Length: 219
Image (cartoon, rainbow, N blue to C red; front, side, top):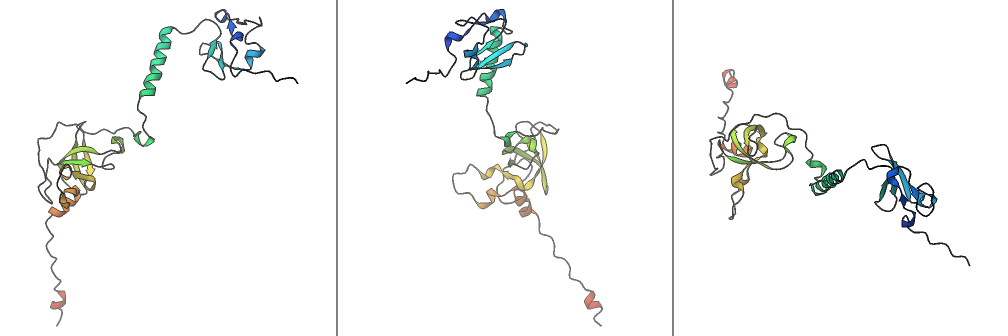
């Protein structure tokens, strides 16, 4: 019974090219133009950036360049370094690719300083956690640290720690930093937003006068 010949899974080394730099490589055992019939089964042809023909091994990373090399060892080192930097660079999910940041005024750190001591006690200089959604999407979907520089509803002005930019942020997404870092159970007001503090500290509106027209025209 005739046995099937064993077919190697990669290009046999005896059919490697000779004379690649000359531009007319030949197969070592066959003596014909390379790639020979045997080598052609394992190769895919492509073109280099210099226009010369190149062959890629289908099963291994090996490749062959027809003609003088169009790159230097320094080029290879630079390409390998770039690939290594790309591999080591952090890759974030799509939600971390933010749109460009619009222009915002930049100021020095404001001279205010205030720490809330009770419900409704929010003043200029209060440090707050800026929740995602309070700023433009260019500043990301992460919590940032800022200082209140102007109070108001529904928005406050804050100075952002880190880049010194000034923003108009939603008061219902600003939480005073005094709400965190406590070992003892903190009262409920320490978890209030700036909007809730402002509503709590706002004086109650006077009662509306009752209409008197009905009494005047009763007769």
